Length: 102
Image 1: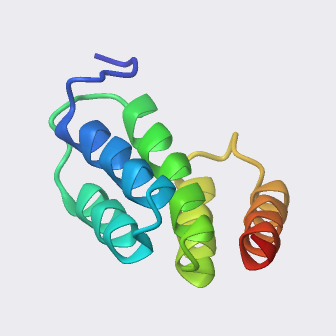
Image 2: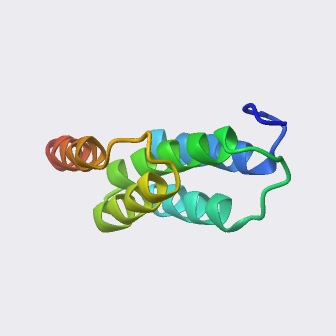
């Protein structure tokens, strides 16, 4: 499969990470992103990896793990050149600034 597949367990882990983030448990959110990223892919194709990585970077940034979010985006733009590295860094900095004032 070369398309996004919601049955991938990593997808569920990222959704769980978002839930922890929105619930205010930043440590659990970060833990769930890390877990999702460390699991092997059970779905062939790259769309799921991109989705999990981009959403994971957002969760990490909002949860306060700004350097980790930036490193993740750097890794993603290396693997998927269609993602714009400078724009990705601006997004992380913006999320970090908003999270700091929230």
